[in-house]
Image (cartoon, rainbow, N blue to C red; front, top):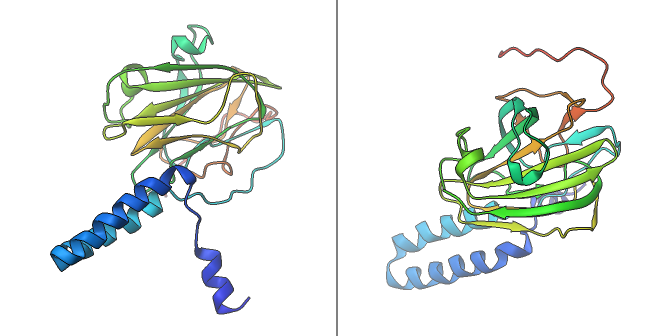
Length: 232
């Protein structure tokens, strides 16, 4: 691999929903360079950050119906039992839940954790609390998606954050979806929760980092005892 190919391999495409924002930042940058050069340089940095925020990197998703992959990049803020939002229709009992917090520096595309068919999509308006808070799963604006998968119904909840003001969902009720397939996007800073059937075995813990579409976060086939972790 030559130098040019190496550089090209490091360039990540921008998702189409970010084109307008990057263009706006770029136009403002040009104007500011004409008005006051120091402000132009600051705007240029912000433009590069905007392109970085809307990046759409390719991912390698394991093809195994028993595995659940992370729906987003970011910090796993919770991994344990949680009561699903009522609009998911998954019942009032706690289910295995994994929450992934996306900072403004994480890729914000959301991916399906399992393959299946979209059974339900419900949008609920709400507050814009810090998405890292557990209370955000109850009070914040959110979009709930239920995937009818081989191993049961899986709930995926897109939760708006402190500065997030727009949840996008590309999926539609009734359509088939593959594990790792892009189904949504949240702007800017947010969280995704996954609620799994009770027999799913969680393979991650709070404090770990996940890569959307690649990191295996749960297994329906695992026979081992729940994993223990230590900080090192």
